[in-house]
Image 1 (cartoon, one colour):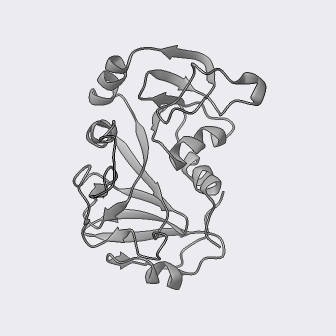
Image 2: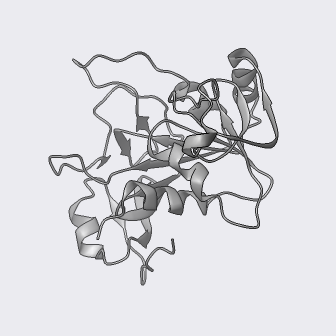
Length: 218
């Protein structure tokens, strides 16, 4: 079966490396703060000016002034620091973020990402996504494999306005883990109970399947 939003976040958190600085985008990525594996320490950065973001608070921990980029209340870990957004973006633009995890509307076989605008719909702006795809050392995209109408979001070429060009190398969806290389999606893992055939059916861009594809470990 397809993964839930929380299960996608759990799989994303397994990508984190001890001692790394990680930016979490709005949506599914922010859930990964709840699932940092035991035994590793990461510094989660929120682009509105918090380094050392922790999990979501319990009801008695809620502080209305402690929020992430999605305006959700969060906690801070020991050693966290708070600063203005100009310093936060200096950190991003200076290449000091090891991983960024972003949602997306579309990703294509050339590593292009469309994540900020659907023509005809009201949008507040690009936000920090363009800076993140340009400045982060590793970019992980999380999203559903297909939209609510069943149309693939992994395409030969993006149809929506781009956020970044040739920058995506790893995608984690509710069905699969894929890498982008040499003009194709390469299937690396599949969600428990999901067949390779279903992933092929829901991937519009070129998909390469080599050998036995293992199920994800969550």
